[in-house]
Image 1 (tube, rainbow, N blue to C red):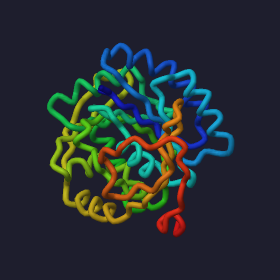
Image 2: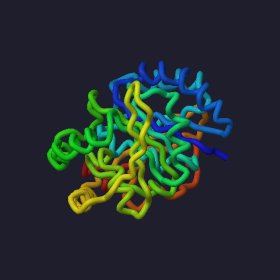
Image 3: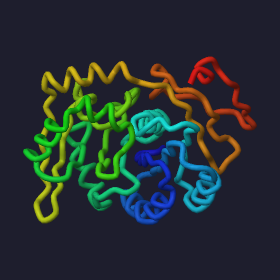
Length: 264
């Protein structure tokens, strides 16, 4: 039974994932319980499948979800959450500036919470940056994870299961999870200072923004690359399917174009 699922969304960063895995796997081994790592490939350039197969041969716990068309970080995370088998879901960037050694600290903070999100800096600075950034403008402008941004959070599966993240909505995950009635902690990490956890509060402005985001979900194609013959077939995931358990696909699957696929 898988306990930890690590999600790594990326585009054209296969080499970075390859460098990350040898450092990440020993840390997860020390957590004792079984784990899996899912790399979410948002339509990397040609020959990506061959390079992923080389990594799959070296890392048995690795799974790869690959998209034929760029959909952005939110769609990648939605597919990863739907495919995750772990009780706890950890998300991180391929080029994360956070220390891998902080993963156990995030997990330990889940005791009174359902989602713990790591932030660079202290609480007041983070709050000011988020409010002055202008959420709607930021979300519309950048659906992908920007190099200056970072992704580092851990959640109980039930807190994020079924989430259909709209374009850019991964930036407002704390508000989306809090809106569902779960408790969220923002863990402020700054070098040289002790970590400080601050409970996230869902104010009226964030509630309105999440209502707007909820209407911006875009279906996306996901295909799993696997070391076995029973890889997940290419198919469209819609809002109702995300987070639901699905039967294992059959081998030798032939993709069939649907009306939804042909319209994209």
